[in-house]
Length: 247
View 1 (spheres, rainbow, N blue to C red):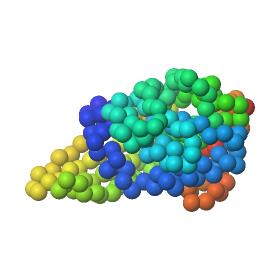
View 2: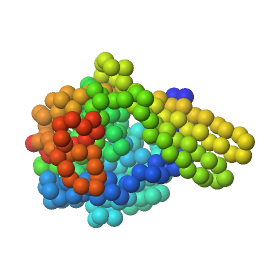
View 3: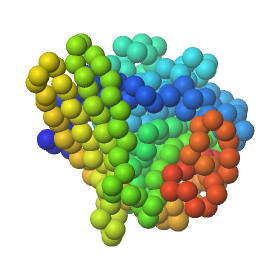
View 4: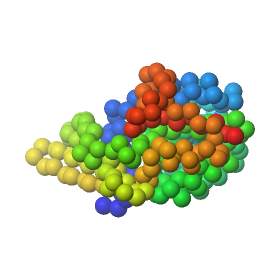
């Protein structure tokens, strides 16, 4: 299966795969960070927006929200969910906006879809150019040095008389700037089971390396990966939330 197959051929299963994600809690947490560190205005762009669940919540919060993604079937679903939003087919490593934004988000570790550090740097420059003075970039990330290749997240869901099992996990070889996200879907209907395996190349870097990429452009604040409360990063956790204010 190609690197983009899940988000194209299997895009109809994406929301089901993410059914256990608390999009509202994630969106509300970033809104709170934006209230603390932001410039007081409320235009918002979501990178790798998928089917638009975070955009939906930001619209409900009163933001003028938009999204971009590299996959048109996902954007088609996002437009149905958020008819008042504008969605564009763009690569977040080299995107442009018609008007600068006050808040740019990238949820679900999607910042790692930049395939290599140079593309990540290009993404950061694109974000910086797309933000107004004092604007914010917020995203979550994983430190490559903390990845456990044997750790997978799994959940099940039922739909249309079928049982679905979804699993995902990081894999890092231990060297270099590439890691992968491994995904698996099992669909069982009666006595018949279909299995899809997908693997996405992603950028791998330590938080020290990530901060070095961000520092020329942003004032950086790092928090524990806990959407229930705002807690400064303890310096050891391998997952963290980054709030970056344009300088």
